[in-house]
Length: 241
Ligand SMILES: Nc1ncnc2c1ncn2[C@@H]1O[C@H](COP(=O)(O)OP(=O)(O)OP(=O)(O)O)[C@@H](O)[C@H]1O
Ligand SMILES: [Mg+2]
Image (cartoon, rainbow, N blue to C red):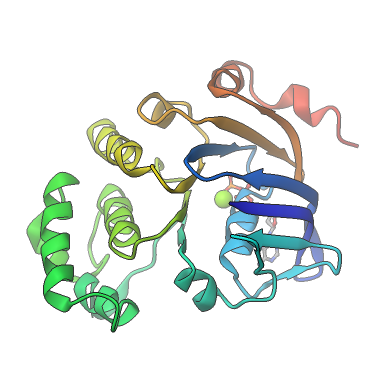
């Protein structure tokens, strides 16, 4: 469980998130929606511990009953928080296996990692040669997102944040990704940042959260995502000065 309280976050001295309080529970899927620039990625980076995002004194982030607000990204990752970036970076000269092996040193046997990679690669329909290349090198948008999911699973992440997992992903890949994610959600918290309702057809969110101008303006069930797709955010933007 992740509890955020009075979360106010600034980047380069500009306030982006404004006094957000919310609880993310275990075994639940959340969809975070909102117009461009509303602060969705900022929230994702903040939860993952990106050092550029500065929290106000009153801000609290608790994960599994521990105050993690001042922990580095590395320590949060070790606690099971995984962030898949909106645009995953390439890592020249490092394969997925090498990266996972390093991240899991002492925790998982390299042979077991290889085996899991093969199994997951098949389930997620990732071309085997992609797993042998440098991370994300020459990978398409959809392939990168699949590789992110594969890493999250093998790392044993329990709080999974996917920033725009559906952007640049074709219909079939989206179905593969979302269906797989849905099948592994037990015991985890999944936070999907999305602009579209389409992914939510394969993985139904327990809660939809709408962020506008750095504030949570509405929460609801999956029907809220449908309503937003039909009507946009105008009605929520009006309430904010
Ligand atoms: N490093 C930064 N320096 C200055 N401003 C920033 C920085 N990072 C984010 N911002 C600003 O914070 C605001 C929120 O950005 P954020 O990326 O969180 O939005 P978003 O909701 O993820 O948007 P999108 O849907 O376009 O991905 C934007 O106005 C953005 O320009
Ligand atoms: Mg974003």
